[in-house]
Structure formats: C-alpha cells, structure tokens
Length: 348
Ligand code: NAD
Image 1: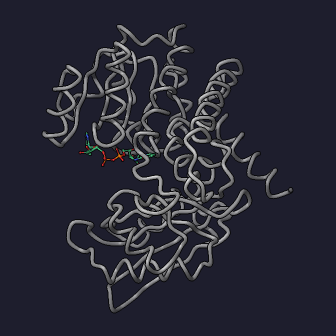
Image 2: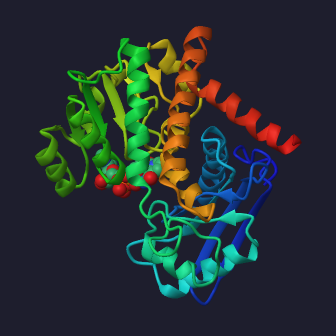
C-alpha cells in the first residue's frame, strides 16, 4: 500500500466487507487537515480490487484538492462500493455501508456519486449522521448538479475571457460531451448566452430533450472530439484527454464538469503546447461540493453558496492567469495552490 503510485500519503485507507449483504467497500481518507474528509460514494463494477483501490485513492486525493480550491472547511475522502448499481443494490448493502461510515466517527462524510442516488443515501442516513446530499431534513441541499453546472458555465466564461479576449459566449461554438445532470444544465446556460451547441451522449432520450430545448446539433459519441468548435466541454467521463484524443481536438479551450479529465497529469503540458487552455476539472466543477458543504454546516444558505461560487470562479481566473504568464500547465498551477492550502491548514 505505501508504495502504491496513487497513495500520496493518505491519512487512512479503510477496507470494509460485510458477508451478509455482500458489501465490499473502500473508504479512502486523503486529508482531514481542512476539516472532515468529504466526498461522494461511487458504486462501480470494477474488474479487479486493484482497479477499485486506484479509483478510491485518486478520487479522494481529488476531493482534497477540490475542497481546498473551493475554500470550504472540508478535507478530502471518497468511498467506493464494488458492484453493479443496476443489479447489486439492496437495503442491507446500504445499511452495512452506513455502519462502515459510522465506524469512522465523522472523519469521513459521504454523499452521492456515480451509481448512487438520494434514496440509497436515505438508507445510509438510518445508520449514520455523516451523510450529505439528502433531499429531506433541515439543511438538505438536494441535487448538487444545478450548482455544479452554474459554476461550469461561469468558469467557461472565465476561460473564454483568456482564450478569446471576451467572456461573451454568443456566437462561439461549444462541443458538449454528455448531457446528463450537469451537461444538460450547462447547455441551458450556454444556449441562453447565445452560444452554438454541438452535443453528444449515449442516451438518446437525454440528447433529444436537450437538443429540443436548446437547438443543439447532435453528433455521434466518437465524433465529438473532431468537432470544429471553440471550446470542448467534457461533462460525462474522465480520462477523455489522452494520447488518442489529443491530436483530434480543434478547439482553443477545454472547460467542463467531468472529474479526472486528464488521463495522466502530463497531458496538461501537452495541451499547453498545442495552445489549448485547460480549465482544471476540480476547480471548475467545485460548485456541487460547495452546495454540499452548506448542508454539512448545518444551516443551508443560498447566499453563502453564491459567495463561495463567485470566489471559486475568481480562483479559476487566477490559476489561468498565472499559468499563461509563466508558461506553466494550468493543472500544475492548480495542484500547487491546492497542496499549499492543505499544508497551511495542517500547520495551523
Ligand atoms: P450523469 O450520469 O447525470 O450524466 C453523464 C452523462 O454522460 C449521461 O447522460 C451519460 O449517458 C453520458 N455518457 C456516458 N458515457 C458517455 C460517452 N461515452 N459519450 C457521451 N456521453 C456519455 O452524471 P453527472 O452528474 O451529470 O456527472 C457528469 C460528470 O461530472 C461526471 O464525471 C461527474 O463525476 C462529474 N461531476 C458531477 C457533479 C455533480 O454535481 N453531479 C459534480 C462534480 C463533478
């Protein structure tokens, strides 16, 4: 474990197994320096335990960085459950997961991620109070996607300002990959701002819905990388900037909501050399966790969320400016600031 390439000095990596329900879960706690480790729970049918561990470690480190850049009083952690979310869910599984979270006594706070929905978390809540992203209760914040999408839209404007000299998106073409919860709302904002949209998804209904209300042009999933657009906005999968896609991009900027967009950090430098301005994913997509942080604080306040979101967009601008003025990849600048904020909190 200590030699694992993604270990990155995690404070704790906890493995849970519950034979009766079939639960196999990892809860990785990267850092509690800034506050309790917060990050969603993902359910995925991993091919191997190693793949599951790597995902947990990378995601929890990502949450530490995301929470630090959003300047919220939370550390970073993540839970992963091994299984097919379409077949393997049961109340017993989520009760067992809830007991696992409870055993960490508040060092980790869970919420929804890929494969997990609000009704699953409602079961987890019966075993532990260390849950967010609920739709019932005094401070419940509900679905974080609209806030994530608003942050992505404001971040797109911030990025356009640096790449095109204007944050007016009217007349620009944006290629959006994935029009689910986040991507769909992002398209609404972009259409309202007068941008031309080219969209793709593997879900025909989602595509038809979004195209119907925004007038977007639809392309096949594999063709989205070749679209002659100004900005590429990944809002579906991770690792979409890789050796196969790199030479296909015909855009001047990449800015979207998906997590872990670069397959390896070195892709940041390769994008820079191609003159593509990359908005670091965990900075531009931090709106959702800000919304969740408001719930965790115990008193949800829309004003506090808006204030933090405005500050986050300004931070994104500062990252882009520093990267451009020093000829450094944007992801390296963001990583350095995030690590510094975590180290400062640890010292304090
Ligand atoms: P979602 O499941 O609602 O939407 C994802 C969409 O991508 C779906 O419509 C799906 O059909 C589509 N998709 C899957 N594979 C595809 C492919 N090969 N090509 C094109 N489209 C494909 O999920 P979401 O909540 O909108 O999250 C999208 C991304 O944003 C994820 O990477 C997620 O981790 C990240 N994110 C989400 C939030 C949030 O608040 N929901 C916050 C931060 C980051």
